[in-house]
Length: 86
Image (cartoon, rainbow, N blue to C red):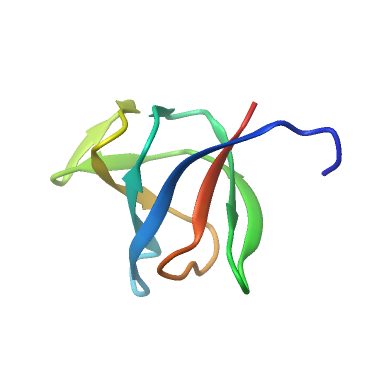
């Protein structure tokens, strides 16, 4: 984990438990294939962005100011921060 550069790209605003999808308000660009770290008071894991949606449509790139649905590998909580691993 040391030596990694992190850039905050958004924050979790909602989590759908049954489908494992987090709603993330982006503050910066995020693309499919990016490595991300999701960190919060009880959340801390890395994953690769495999799929994200805007208004139920799959997208490859999303930009700051947009809200996305992000498929996550583990449970996340509202307020968790999403970082892009540079």
